[in-house]
Image 1 (cartoon, rainbow, N blue to C red):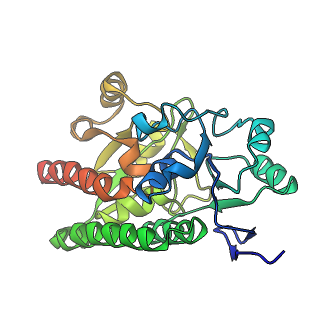
Image 2: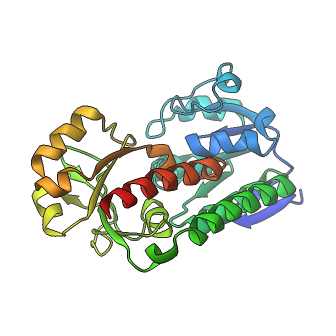
Length: 278
């Protein structure tokens, strides 16, 4: 039987679809939300328990485990036309096992803001929703252009930022990550950009040695809260301790439709912090 569509996904694997998808499983929360934005929500037959947006639409969608431990047997029973995965959020062995069972898997791997837009366009093609994906891509591009245009002098006078994503052990991210590119786009220098590992372990003492101007504490993947903020302030030099901010992890880490409002919201928060530093 001739294929309806053949393409290469974000990690270079070939995906072959016999027909336009009617039954889709999403293993990625941000992409689950994006499916509905692409008018493809009716295709969704299962998602992970971490897929929470849009809440009302997902209330009746079966859950098939977490992002790191999906129930592959239940997924196979659903006989999906396509599974949407991510190279970081999902385990390689799970993706490979699904592919070995003949299940088409689109594996995404955006590490930059433009890369996330490319993933959306690729997903739109795979879902037979190219026009909707193109419209979403334009909305994101417009949001990014507005942020960059508003930077002014901060496009050159960049503040240095330490942004941990985990605690016990402390972990952060280097330049080869989507979160880094978001902060770069908003006029900040990640003090761990040159780290040899994508998600290096560190300590607060070591981070201070990198001379950050501000510290950001996102509530995803580690759920930093007000208690963590107060603890962090006590571990920092007094001046830096006054420049610690809790931010939305979704705004920093989620790609897809969340980028439209999330990037703007994060930029607004960081702009106020930047003004306070000056």
